[in-house]
Image (tube, rainbow, N blue to C red; front, side):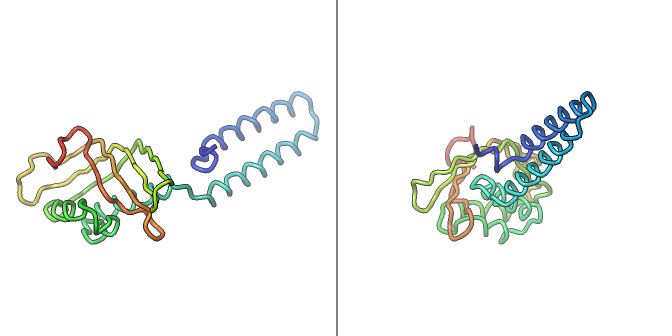
Length: 177
């Protein structure tokens, strides 16, 4: 049932198909009462879309945090990126050093999969995604400018937002990045 509040696409497709069938029935039968059914489907669709917009799921909150970090990364705002990272985590110092030596022109992700563990206190989440970064190493030590890799990120819900606590580049040996 999560699809109901995370993605409006199924609602829109189902509404369009239902209205399409009702219009065909209206044209074939000429029954004016079908106009009420069409209006009802439209009103119900608007209500479901309003509910989808109003309910923010854990996955959407994690996605907002990752998107915010990407925007700060593209702006080369190191303090802004670090604001999305738990200062007590080992990833904080590691990323602070790495971010200081690159100029990022593009940062994005896709194929996001989020698993939330509400049994932990504070709540934790694991986010798996494909990450893309276009950057230039200011020291000239890294030869490539485009980096595309599968990431696993651990986040913790602190206060009212998700903070990155650790990350792993899938396929890289531990500690080699």
